[in-house]
Image (cartoon, rainbow, N blue to C red; front, side, top):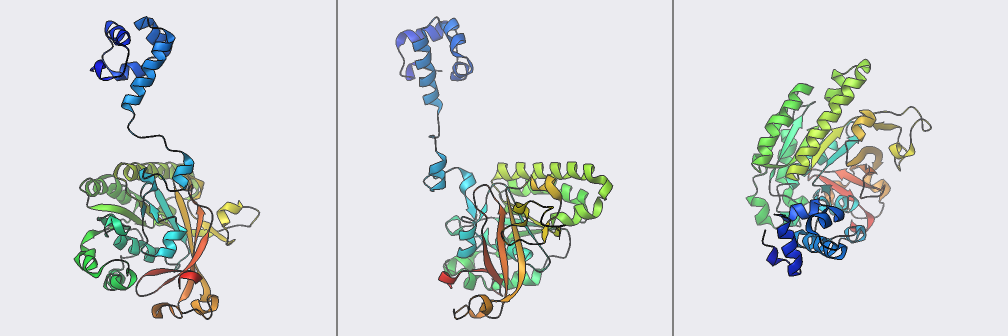
Length: 356
């Protein structure tokens, strides 16, 4: 370490050298009294030495929570989002799915969970300036066969759904070549995929989105009620692995979850039921909930678009479509909110009166 590069009194530099202190790390690892004893400097000189050294190694300025909330901070990476390809849904989620952490989409059958996942697999391939990450996705199926026909339909209509993206950019993206599909029939196969195959794809930059559809299917089938402790440990280990990979490679993890009936309103905290006061709740219990950064609940209503938004012109593909809801059950950066959406041939579209 060249102490002469620091703005210090020559006598302080001489004292540090006499004490045989070789690096800044040593200075910062010593307390004030210890540094005084070694260098024979005054308390004022030691305090100035600590401040000078700390300022020299500081790389990022201090940022307040208020600055992050107002969007005045260009970092950290936790603030970055993966767009859903729809301005209404992106607005609901504060820009999209966080790059770091596990996001869960829970809901009953036919609520549109898989549709959202497939749309994200296409969105991640767009340039960063359009909310993507210019990389592919790993889609792990644990229940049904991957819906290839529906994926191809979504690809064919990207120019309609993503009207914000120039047509020449869309044509250059080979969407189907950048989605890696894996089928896991049991927990061991899922662990093998996550611990061995996934790190290779991430380290090579081939994927920047991981979808598990669904997380509940395997754990609900392979573990009996009496195996609750073993199941909890397995979920904790699984969640820790996903968190490590997501943080290391700045890759969003999206897990689909099933739902189970809630016993009663009084038997369940209101935060689990959400704003819409549903009679179902996500599966896998508290152990899995603690692994999540954000939990979304989607559901299918009995209303059509025209029933909820009468007299408002909607895209032709959305006319007569069944309304669905997406609700934020919990997220550290978002309030509990919900919005309506539909699934059309182009993909998933959020609906809001002032944007229709």
